[in-house]
Length: 484
Image 1 (spheres, rainbow, N blue to C red):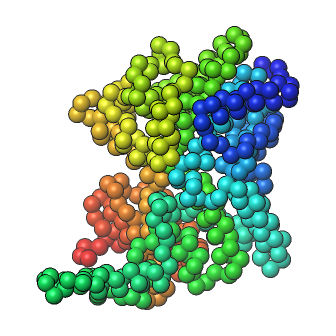
Image 2: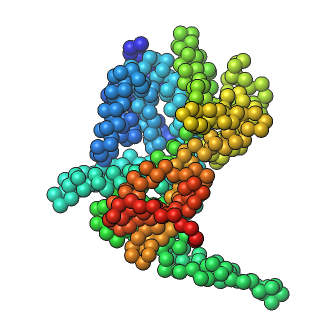
């Protein structure tokens, strides 16, 4: 449509949107907007939206791939991109129409409120620190690349492996990572039990035999889901610069993890509030008509896939309907939910992530309305396995949850950092009914072996048998464990 606006237009509409944000009691960081062209937006996409980021070949590959797809008309570009930081930074495409700029600004404020108030983000990297932290990371990585004793090839070897393993981390931010000393103290507490002031009248408690017999020198005493941090802290063959690179990758993965775990909630929340704001801004008729078209394009259902904007918005609408009744987007909407309803929504926005959000609020009626079903391969075909009826909707919902956020990734934990008393590393795949794809498992062990420097073993289940996958100097091998 071409550029049909001026910076003064955007400033005026932003001020009106901020008035609505205050009226609806959204709690946001200060918001900054930057205008960018197509190539700049592709660059921000490739570098995860960060204005400063360390160099790596994969980011350049991502840039060229996205640009080629866009040139060929195969893939479009986002209307905006927003960073979870304080102040929050959002990029707006220069070629957007005025309607799209207003719409995306309203959408950004919804994300901003979610970033600031959801518990998952509150336990991650502090928003006011992330931009400075990423810049420091970039400076340190470049210093290692420019160091003649290290160089680009050595740096990229570590980053390649660390990137591949970066989301093998603890998935519940409320569970603290214990130091070896804290694990040892907890094991001793389990072994001795807590003091009983009424021991004389109670039957004597037996100590925890498993804890009593535990090897208190084993590392870790409890399975450790933070694979990169364990390697960084206990890898015997790493130089300080290698440990630093591993820590950098881990820190940035933890920053992005909440966005992965709340995609449906977050996009639905931003869509819910951009709709409420746009419907009450008093838009000129031509802009309002374009908004209706654009909004419906964003939140439409996608055959054969789940649109997080669509599903998230449907659930938030259902929650409002339960409080106020007659909330049907197809028949017209109230201007915005009432104050008491907003408070309930704010509580849910603060305390949930996608897995719990879907488990609590995605019911049979809503799943049927969304036409959700499960399919699976049979031979060379894909067939519908379950539909959202009275008998199948729970399984369809549970399958969806298993594909949400990090649930779609295998969970791998460290069991022993001195396996076989030879500095080997023993890992465990927490099997949830889905076998590993052995090709990916082999590549994963290659990356772990690169960082650990000694033999790596992975315990898993394949076709209902316990299997140990190993990677050492002699390559990749598999052993079936008959007796534990």
